[in-house]
Amino acid sequence: MIGYLIKNNFKIMFRSGVNLLIYIIGPVIISAVLASAFSALFESYEAAGDFKAGYSIEEDSELIPYVDILKEIGEENGVYFTEYEPGTAEESIRDHDLGGFVEFGRDSYTVYKTDDAKTEGTVLNYIMSTFFTAMISGNADEIDIHVEHPDHAPAIDSTDYYGIIYIVYFGWLAIVCAAGLLSNELKHRIPERLNISGLSSFQIYLSRLVPLVSAVALSLGIAAVFNSLLLGVHWGNILLSSLIVLALIIAASAFGLMLYEFTGSMVAAIFIAFALIWAMGFIGGTFESYIMSSLPESLKNLMPLYHSNRALVELSSMGKSDYVVSALAYPGVIAAVCSVFAVGTAEIKRRVR
Image (cartoon, rainbow, N blue to C red):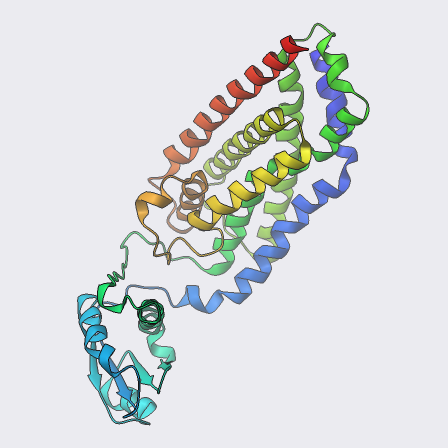
């Protein structure tokens, strides 16, 4: 009976061609767009070290009282500011070998950088934007800025990064692929029939989990092949990378089905899953590269997406990663816990009925 049910659910899922097509085409399109948009930023990433920066300030500038604070913050982060005459930004950068230049106007600033000092320019932009935001809020004298250049940051281009990262992101949204199956169940009152079928709650859960994992894995596998062929994405250790992606798909599927059992609504489950995964992706490197993110490492390590992202990116760029174990174990724990809660909730509902 359980074999027949899994087979039938397979057929239902593969009839929902639109969802599967989204999982094949979506990662490829988003990866291509973001890889192109952020290619220059990735090419320039390397530790800048200490460097000199120039600045000029107009006589009537409202920013004059804050310059000394900015210079102190700069020195703490290895950026040493020297004042030059207004209107000499490009000349000063060229003649004095500066990593960047800041022109302070009356109530605004402009950052100048050269193609030869892209990383220094990125650091200078970060310091200025963070400082200016604090200054506007009146907290400039209390701000604590630390620019970190982790020596473990892998050398990777934007194509490889986003080509990998969005396979992970779509994998964690696996519950979307179950929309057709779950809608069909509700439409034909399948849960009520299954409750009197003699199948256990665990068997019913497996009849959903196995087809969902298989459909998502197949779709993302095709997407990963397209990313490699069309965009030139390098996956490093294929076996380990495949196991990591499969582990996160199983965890994501169990997580989504647990939400479905909790809410009893496909729409609510998808909405909650999307909100949570978006937040975890925001912290874990889906939208801003984790390599350049200023968020605390301790916070990023709480996100399962970060472990998957980090392991896969480092396998691609270095051939090894200290995050492989956690990228397999973390989803494994999530899958086990979510499965227990999903089956337990289903069993409680069954007994109540």
